[in-house]
Amino acid sequence: MFAAAQVASAVKDQDVDVVVLEGSPKIMSKVEKSGGGRCNVLHDTSKPVPVILDGYPRGKKELNGIMTKYFGPTQARRWFEKRGVELKTESDGRMFPVTDSSQTIMDAISSVAEENGAFVKMRVKVMSVEKRTDSDGPFILTCNNGIEEIFDILILATGSSPGGYRIASSLGHSIVDPVPSLFTFNAKHQIKEGGLLHGLSGLSVKETSVTLKMKVPGKKRKKVITQEGPLLFTHHGISGPSVLRLSAFAAREFHDINYQGNISINWAPRFGPAENIESVFIRMAKTSPKRTVASSCPLVNNDGTSAIPRRLWSKLVSECGFNVDSEDANKAVWGEAPKKKLGALSRAVTACEVSVTGKGTFKEEFVTAGGIKLKEITMNTMESKICPGLYFCGEMIDVDGVTGGFNFMNCWGTGFVAGTNAAKKIMLMSQSGDDLP
Image (cartoon, rainbow, N blue to C red; front, side, top):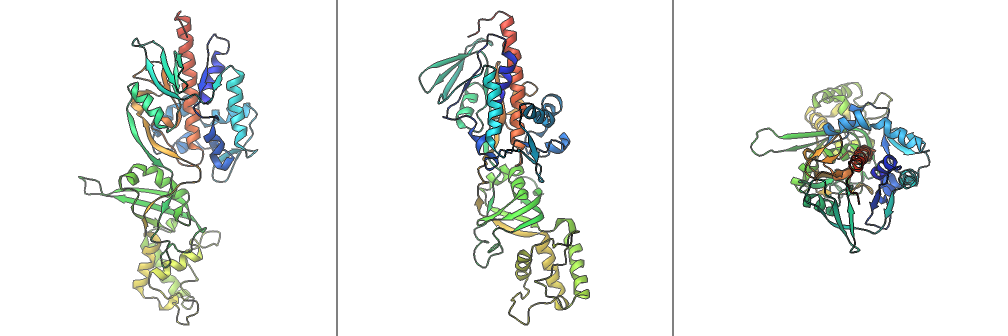
């Protein structure tokens, strides 16, 4: 719909039909569901483009040109504001319409498309596409209603739909196998009673560092992927920005190990390595020898709060062999803590092992890593290098972002470029005297 809006705006005074073929009974259903119905339309557009590009595990380099030359975060914000959409930026960088309603975004896009003459056909699913043998020959689309639709220009914006990939493949394109991205981690063994994560559901940790280490065939060194950010405990395991970022940046690696393996979590990364933290513990043992270990975490943030929430801290202390029973008069105090246990506790803080037993879902989000190979697309026009007149945009291509508005930003940017250049091409064809259907 966004690409159609660009085409329709550019050719509104020309004798050109702009048609959107929508297989479902409703347009933009993914937009409607996003952000819990509020639509996380963009990420903080005040951030420099290089910072925003760090939110893309795949496609960062290719999106750079689009965002810096053609349609970047600032242009996207202005596009919506020009259409009467007032936006707000929340503390985590996510941008929403002030109405907190996805319908606001949907209305803005559909009104531009339809007011400029784009026509939407609902429940028309494209089953196959053929192209005439000559390079400028039209596309023949066979639809589920048995009708053939013929167009000179075709934009594919089918997201992660297998049907879209089949069409692209039939027109000569290669597909990078899609795998899930943006998912939570299940840890069924450690959420059970007696496990490290038992009873922590709903608790969050403000700063964490989450790491996956994997053996690479033929290489001595392991591949290490690390992401930072807040972490949230769930009924099934762990979630939160650090986990979701790791799931995105290591999407293929997790797929290769069938979403089962160990990850390492640093619960207080800003305090340095284990040696530094152990020295903090030793100092605590000297300065506050009578304080109980389980109730007094010496890792304190600048605002005076504990870096590790009390319930989690107590679990870590217990895991390292300290007596944490609140009813026991012999519960561990700092002054009597053996150096060996202090070392173990420092390692539990900096390299806590969690066994991932599977992946969960992240709210209503469903993002895939994979899609049309970017080398087969001219990224400054989004036109196929293999099939002239064929354009791509959105999640269908091998670009994906972390949560927070990044995936929509890819859609708006590539949709704008695809739509703009498709319009240029159709007008050139018109001027050359080609017989346009």
